[in-house]
Image 1 (tube, rainbow, N blue to C red):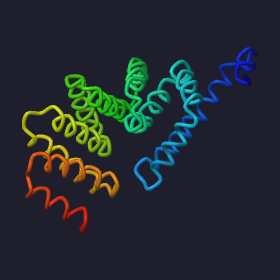
Image 2 (image 1 turned 120 degrees about the vertical axis):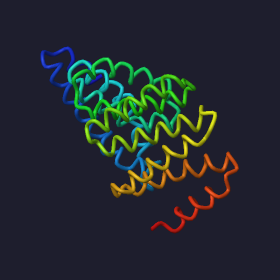
Image 3 (image 1 turned 135 degrees about the horizontal axis):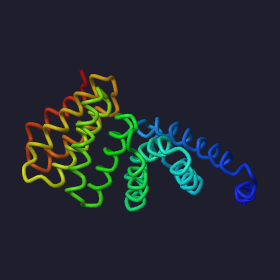
Length: 219
């Protein structure tokens, strides 16, 4: 109600922009814990503010498209884990239409989370297209974090849709190695965990034992 009254004033866009910027920063802070022991708390904090976050996303798309793209990319893991797949796809598509000319790392990040959601929705062709484009853009930009996440998404694509899990192994391993080289321990362990699951379902006990050993006794 308070925002609606402000929107009736002459300063509506300024207030909308400040509101959107606040919640973009809020999501960015919570995102730092999406890979930590505080993951559930961080997801719950975002869930509690979803109405404001939706309003902030709408304002950002209109007033500051680059912030909107970063915003949507930052929400990707939350949307995926909490099952907001259809909503995520809609927001991501809207932001993607405004991403032309933005920095490569920003575009690559959005494409990666788009690919992740496509996988959750069973949209194989769209998932592979976005993930491979993200990896290409991140590599071109020298964005090593972006490359690792794109590699992770490609691995997940092959794990879900590939006829042979060899490609999934390759991409999960690449993601894990790149995260480890960057000192991103939680993300590296997550990539290893996905590699472990792919090996388990394939019945590849040798790989299961090797990955389990690395997870239990890293370094």
